Length: 122
Image (cartoon, rainbow, N blue to C red; front, side):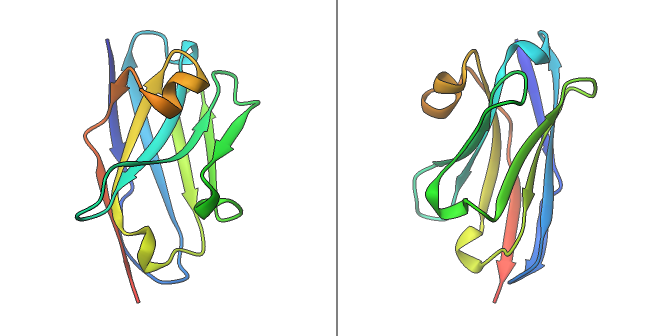
């Protein structure tokens, strides 16, 4: 089992920045690729970004490329999502996820966090 706990969400004005964190415990963190998803009100959960176990490979959905950066610190068992140039369309509950490979974490993760709310005001 892997337990994931997100933090860092909140209310920010359009154009602002937030950094989300996801702390992992349980099975060895460095063995897992990590990802971020989001779910806006009335919409399905969507993939946002992923990073492989070593941090050398990352992937982003088109709508966040150039604005969001995913990173990880295996010594701290933590993955981050730096979000810049936020706009109201980024408002959602953001979920951390873990998967045995970067392909798995982007499609059908093995583990999920409970989510953290991000609200961007116009």
